Image (tube, rainbow, N blue to C red; front, top):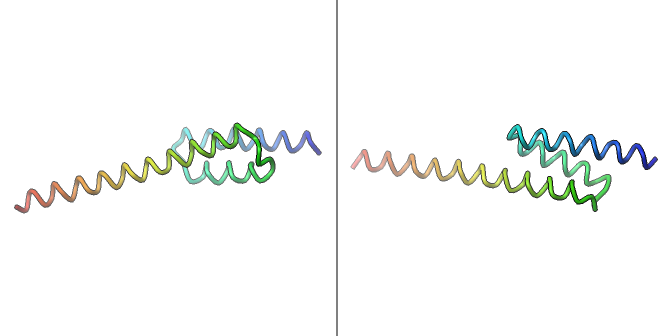
Length: 79
């Protein structure tokens, strides 16, 4: 039924947005992908997925840069 599909997509979209703002990137990605299985052409879901994937990647880069910085500082102290 079309109404139930639209309702489920709206629910998933809202959940994905909440997860994204709560920095739950992996969960948001999964939520958007699940909703896209219902309607692969929904632009809001696609935008949400892209935003979640970008935020997830940026968070990983930030962690890596912090680790590199910490390693460099430790190396300087040992010198």
